[in-house]
Length: 108
Image 1 (cartoon, rainbow, N blue to C red):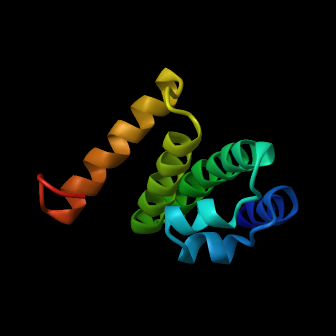
Image 2 (cartoon, rainbow, N blue to C red; image 1 turned 90 degrees about the horizontal axis):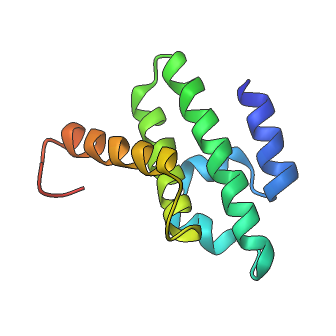
Image 3 (cartoon, one colour; image 1 turned 60 degrees about the horizontal axis):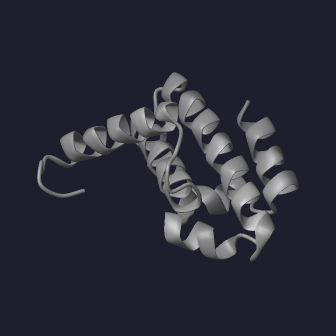
């Protein structure tokens, strides 16, 4: 499954999955094409990151899964000022998970 996600990321967005995993959300946004395609690429990448987080979780890698979900939320928030309720809920849960895992309720 990871291979399929990696292939889709490279083919559909033009960014290899290993670069996605090592990059901050801000860096990923800079790597996307400028203009109208940027929003589409960001949403495709966000969906791939959500799928990646499920795979990572199933493989017993909760830290990597959490990072993928956080990147997904950042991309959705950047490209969609009013995300759908499902995405808002997932992002809220991810933020709470990040706060809890960081041990600091005041900062992410």
